[in-house]
Image 1 (cartoon, rainbow, N blue to C red):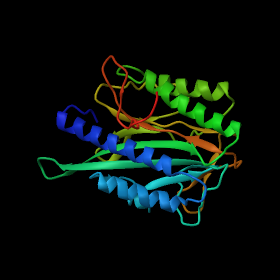
Image 2 (cartoon, one colour; image 1 turned 90 degrees about the vertical axis):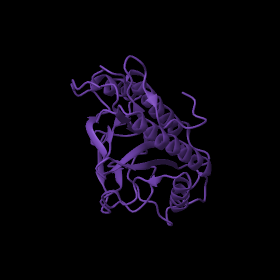
Image 3 (spheres, helix red, strand yellow; image 1 turned 180 degrees about the vertical axis):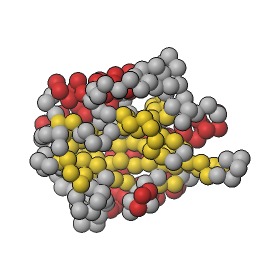
Image 4 (cartoon, rainbow, N blue to C red; image 1 turned 90 degrees about the horizontal axis):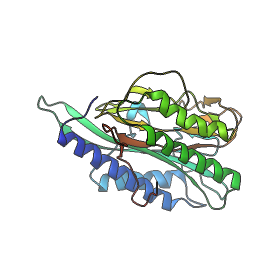
Length: 262
């Protein structure tokens, strides 16, 4: 989808801004003793207070507002009262905020901000902190090259270079994506070089989301049919931003958090 109407661009900006604000607030709440259920309840309340709709809740049957993935959980972790954070953990939180309008023919159109962050719980090891920092740096490296006319392989390559330099596993089954009225759409954006010659176009809204593992590349899905974990049970980090692709300039980061330094 190519976004050209000012009204649509404004709604994407509104959704992205709210998603970034909520994610920053959740990050402040992360501490030993809090459950992922508590974080999820707070996220839903904040999104609704901001006038938005929780994108993930009910999407393909997902039961919660955020994906809360702890330690070896890569993505799509289901919040739970029993999943209580402790010092030394890391948690990845992925959320979406939606604003909706009706088209001229009465169809409901969704405008979504999709974003993720990995944060420490209490005191963590230097090795885990470096995993977080490097995964975040790879997101920014991908963002820096994402502009109209660039092929997707340049984004994947910028992310892959940081993983290879630091000997991380790269999650290969999951990656970034286009964002349209129905949320996920083409293009699928891999976090490594694949030879893709697909070019970005001005007006596209995309999400870039690297996932690095402290161990190998391989992942599997748990019996709940949602939670993805590393097969070697080594920790994983995940970052994501939604972007509006610009012509001849770096993209607009729609989901930038209020106090985020890039």
